[in-house]
Image (cartoon, rainbow, N blue to C red; front, side):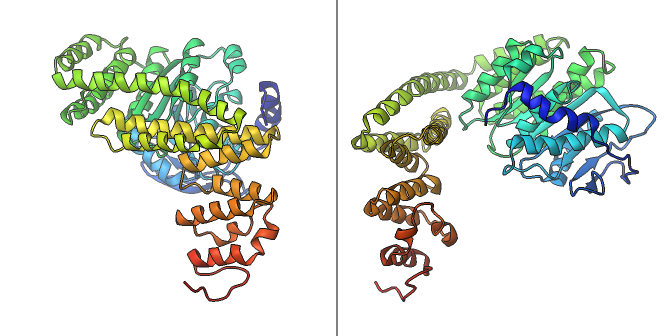
Length: 476
């Protein structure tokens, strides 16, 4: 369902501003993460929280609300407490955000938590920040709709954005993103370009471990962006010691890259730092370091490799949708072999000795997987013909061989069309990938007649050692 901004706000305004949450005495230890703290007695929601070692109620504090997509509150709070200790932030992490729930449901959960903390702790309303991973990143970036005073968001791998909200919003935020080098982050970049259009201060860090939180060091760099911006806006005293500490820590990250001969990535990080520290008298030092890197022959080679990969990626991302849509219109099943060859070439890039090509291979793979998944959903929603649905599903199995969704779609559609041969063919292909969920195999929609057949059950027994029906000993 598409959520327009007025509906979005309407659904939550009443919840956020009128929900009564009793202020409770919460027992916490300074300098330690405490888990399983309740929102209130009437709901099961809970959270983990960290108070700085020097915490006192005599002053107001900056805070980061953290939303992990699997509700791992205590682990996430520990991660962020390590990253923020020197910068003096309170950390609160929800235990109840789930990748299985809708954005609206997760926002309802998050809003209860925010309301609870703001009622019970001395929080500086000019230094409230959010952070999230995956579905939690959507929550993190959507919360300013409900709590406009949020001054910064840190998002990993995904972001929620609404042009109408950005156009109406008077508060300019700091938006820090983390995207994996190997993930297809084109939409992520487009969203950050939109933040810049509406004059938000935005930056993207790249990191190695996709689909997980970045390291403590990188999170500290991201939170440091909030700290520096708070100083610039007068919401926090300008502290040269903290500024220098943050700068030196980030310089060490760039130097570590350089020591590992990742000159291109070190240079790109320094470029980000030039913008980040331009009001703190650091530009000359950064520029000198960049000059040193530019003199390195390895840097020049890496820059050439990354530029070549970028051009190749742009060309293929332009060609692939055109060719794929042409195949769908003409129902060209005979072109599946060509796509198989394309995927083999992409897969070979992942084994290259050139880092830029390896990352390109993973990004193209991610792009094709995402494109065909979204295209299947669109075709199904408009009740496209069975040939198109089967073709796009076949391509999904080509680009994402280990994912059972494409196989399930082919088996279901073929069975409903009476094409049991194709259904059985892709059932065996699925089983060859090592798929072992017996219950799900018998719950594929539209396969009632097929799953009662001896052939279906014999094939499952051959690979899994058991079947639900005709459960006779299998003989080779």
